[in-house]
Image (tube, rainbow, N blue to C red; front, side, top):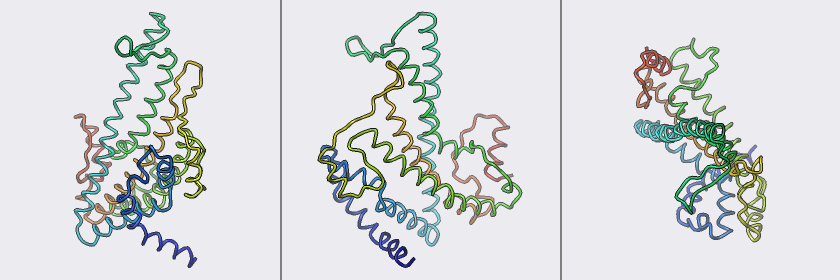
Length: 303
């Protein structure tokens, strides 16, 4: 137990140093013309060092906001929720593209009996079989699911299993929210990210890398490094960019973690300031429907 505590303290102490080294020597992990730099990026992207840099940053900002200036946390909430809202609002257009493309496919396939679709000027047109475009609809669906997750959370659109939450007082709700962020939301998404990170890279390059590989081993593997982006589809002429789904899983994990931090800060601030601060600075989309306004008011805890 003592060894574990010393290990944790050591990583907290080294976190600022690791961050400064990463900023001071970007070529060591961002110069992707160098295979060793790619391997360092892969290693540090899911490393203990990176975890403690992020954790230390969150703790420092939280302590400053709690002990010195509360506006620091409110600005953090607005920025992090703004990221989720912006990404989600942009990705939501994929839903419209999915519908329009599906309608186009039905017309071209059933009425005009077209075998392929070309986009772009003649000579440089992007041409793919109709089945490729049909399978690509899965990508639009994945974009909506993964990129709109934080946006939907901010908007109060996720389904919540409510056994005791609605029956307790406002500040008790905020305590439950903070507990859920720390002990459920963050650990679950961190574990998912650790699996998704290496799962993604195994479909982008060779040799295969795993979570158990240390930096020295990966630097040795860089000698045989080469890009090997997954281009195999489920059917001969079907969609063949399934590596994008692996990238979206990683992006999903990052967005959910960002939202977990924002929700923890918001819950703490609303617990501290009371019920009048419920929904403060929350950028909620409105359609003008009175029923929707009532629903958002209930979600924010106001009456």
